[in-house]
Image (cartoon, rainbow, N blue to C red; front, side, top):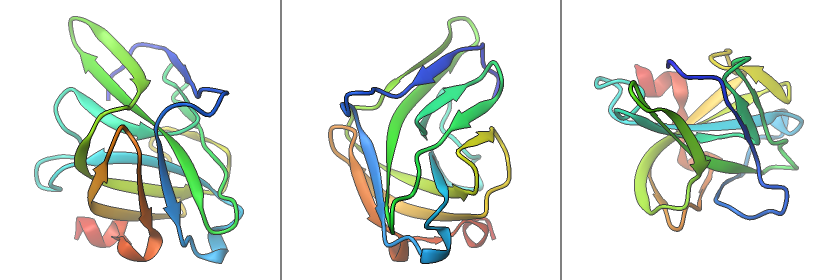
Length: 150
């Protein structure tokens, strides 16, 4: 995804929207998580012109993201909406909308990752309902990311 350089930093006061994932297997309990949404795998990874992204911060100047830590068997991921347009540049802001999306959560072993870096594991959750930007799911309700693409 082409983007102008910008940095997105999570709100320090705990405000804004979050995606909460529970029931994460113990083997990933010391990991970090990222979120993104997409549509039908045959139609491409993301809707035209925007994507929901979950991270503490994203820096497209360095193509890196800082991720929230998994605590026990759960993680709370700040959710952003990232919009882009060839003639207007990129905007990123906390997601506060309502809608139903298919989202993927990927698990990494480091707190900072390169965008596009291969994850340790990923789960896809279909028909996730966001209300005022917030949503939740349980690990067992998803399917393996590799299985989703097959």
